[in-house]
Each structure stands twice: as C-alpha cells, then as structure tokens.
Amino acid sequence: MIDPKRARLPIIRQCTLLHLNRSGVYYRPVSQSEANLELMRLIDAQFLETPYYGSRQMTWHLRRLGHGVGRNRVRRLMAIMGLRAIYQKPRTSVPHPEHRKYPYLLRDLVIDRPNQVWCADITYIPMKRGFLYLVAIMDWFTRKILSWRLSNTMDAEFCIEALQDAFTRYGAPEIFNTDQGSQFTTPRFTGLLEERQIRISMDGRGRWPYHVFIERLWRSLKYECVYLHAFETGSELRVGLTKWLTHYNGQRPHTALAGRTPDEAYHDGPTATPSEWRHNNNRV
Image (cartoon, rainbow, N blue to C red; front, side, top):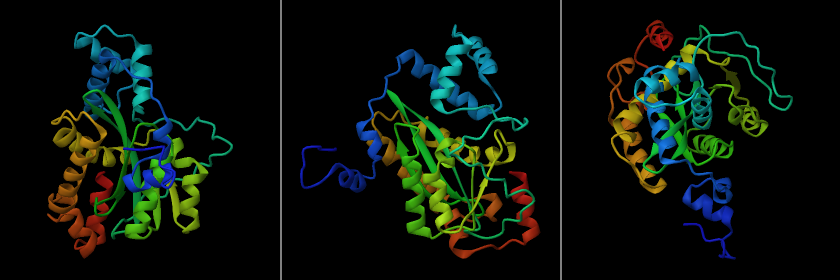
C-alpha cells in the first residue's frame, strides 16, 4: 500500500494515513521456516495456559507433543516472540544508563475510577504465514481498550503511536503502568508521559499480579479471534482485531464491572464501593 515514488505524498504521511509503523516500511524481517512457525504457535498457546514456563519447561512440553527440539532453539523462538516466564524473583538486572526504571506505584492502591490508571502490554500474534506484534493500552478500572497498534518489529515506534492516539482520544491518566520492556523504558516513550505530568509506574521483572491481569485480555483475544481465524495478511488481521475489540469494548459484559461493558463503565463511572473495587483489583 506504500508507494515510495509519490513525491507529493512522503512516506511518513502515507504511513500516518494508513495507521502503519514507519520503521516497518523499511524493515525486511528474516523469514521463519514453516517448522519454526508451527513451534511458535504451539509455544504461544501453551504460554497462555502456563505463563510461568521458561525455556526448559517449554522444551519438555514440546517434546511430549512429539517435537524433537533443543532448549536453545526454544529459547531463541521465545525471545523472538517476546515471551518471558512470569514468576517472582529478585531484581538483579542493571538498568540501562539511558533507560530509567521507575518504581511500582500500584501496590495497595484503590483503583476506583476511569483514567486513574492506564496500562500497556505487547503480545505476539501468530498468522498463517508469519506473525506480528500487538500493543494495547487499557484503562485499568474499566478494562476498556483505549488504543492499539500492530507492528512487524519490536521497536518502540508502534507503542508511541498507540500512546499518542490514546491521548488524543481520551485525554491522560493519573498513572501509567507497564513492565520494564525497552519499548516502554525508552525516553521517547516516558518523555511523552512526563510532559503531561503523568506518574509512571513499572512492574519489577516478572511481577505476577500485573501479568495475570493483562493476560486475561490476551487469552480471550487469541482464543476467540486469532486462533479461530488463520489470518494470512496484516490487513485481514487488522480487520479481525478491530471487529473483536469493538465487541469487547461495547458488547462484552464483565463480572468485575457489575455486568457492564467496558464502554459503559468508562463513560458512566463506578457503581461499586471503593472497598469492592479494591477487592476486584487485588484479585488480578
């Protein structure tokens, strides 16, 4: 869809009009073999069931399914997919000098209104002949998906575009929570938050409660949309995700929202007491 020969319409403008990540236009990914793509689909499905599986456990799982794979291969494929085992462990990583790590601000916090806390995460989306990455920005209290973007690379650009879109459409939250992935710790991303005086919260690596919460969205999306449709192109995937996320926001009732949809909860505000909402949020 991008025509680099249009002198009067630069590539950056074409990408903006098509809601595409500009860096992806120039990127030429190394294609994966059919065997690797099949393994990645199996890994993705199992990771939704057991997000605490590291490369060793995942290798054993694949071998039980009859695939003679080694741990190094599984580790490499999980790295491509952006998957890391979820479990509590000491914070031993050394922060990158240009990527500040912010403290976690949600511990024991009562989240009782829309736009109090937003969160973001990235997931791997398998396709019939390849894969893409999806970032979503969610309002924590109402579970409403505020913005999302697809990309064929794990750079920060598509995350920044999703964040700017959420700001344009919904204003700004009081707190923005993410993990410590490089896409979210880059000054280009955190700078946009600091400009709006948004408090930045970051989970310690492998923090369990946050990932259980966001994985509920990924699990529903993949089992109810992605796995049921063998999308062949990015355009087909975008149409499918748009339809599912529209249904999720506007028609899917949530128990934690007293039977309301995310759209209803976001626009109408809370109906439960703060203590009830604290209980619901602590469960995730």
